[in-house]
Image (cartoon, rainbow, N blue to C red; front, side):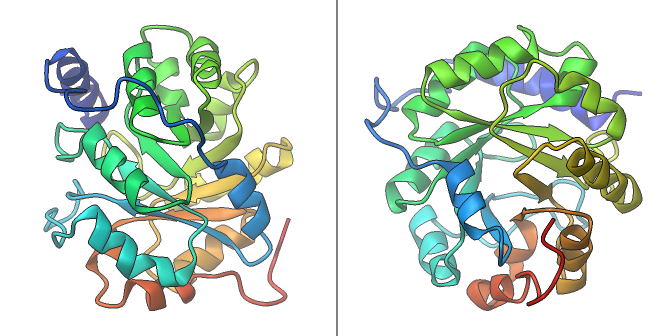
Length: 269
């Protein structure tokens, strides 16, 4: 039985080869992009928060999220002073695109993460042209042989194009793929990409092991729906969070985000 990750990679590969994947994007990247790493390090004492713009959340009983334009989303979220934004660029199952990234980047001076199942150089070029500050690379894609080039080479290509790299892990065993990869930020995904279920015990162990390995700044990715979810990630050593679905569903996004900040006197590893 094919898992979600394999299905998505197959769909992404077809999407990237299509004529419309990058149609209409600027031929060259903008001259200056803010640093995601610097923004997270600046805000880590109170808990950095990166807010995700997405249209669909697969794995939920009701995956369709409230419709907002990028401009409307930024206007609702920005009063909470997020460290940056993440944007789903994945078409299959997520209904995102690089054009969403470009729209979001035009609406904010904050750094924007190109969140995609990156497997090839073409996606990195498109991320730069869309105005992203950073791309997501997923260690599991390397471990399962889905990448067109080695993980370290994709990271080098991103840096050559002026992009930072957020390297995602889920299990501690994936730490073996970190060596030689020039990552600027590290993240641990609470969600298992095959089942789409939250696996908090595994993620919390991986966060602690990643922190113990000296890899930082470190983000908790996904699974934050309440302040107690955020507190568990802060306590495990996260410097910041990436929050998406719960923000999209909130009637008061900025107030919700403020409730997730690190408690005064809380753990700051």
